[in-house]
Length: 124
Image (cartoon, rainbow, N blue to C red):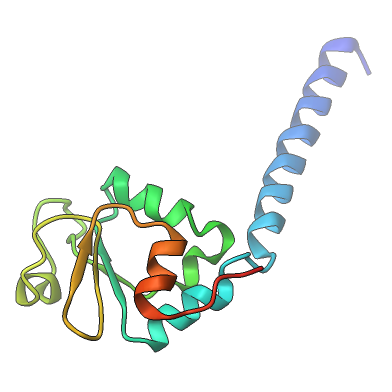
């Protein structure tokens, strides 16, 4: 095997290994799993749009627990039209958190603020 071929084999192994490690890390339990579940149990809903950078930031604050968030997508796949639930709920900005008592918080919220609002426990 010549040096050029070896170089590309090593690069390929590193890329595949990196992709595999990234996938594996996403399957691990998240720090905020219990908080994310509790938010949903307490009637909180996170309204957002797939194209919204603040919504992506909000999801990142929950790390591996983001998939457990009580999330409602407000954008149609075309990125312009809104989903009916967000029209009906009169969601005007993203992210918007709505709570069981009807109150709302807009913008990126910390896990601490959401835990306090819903009386959910924070991880230790």
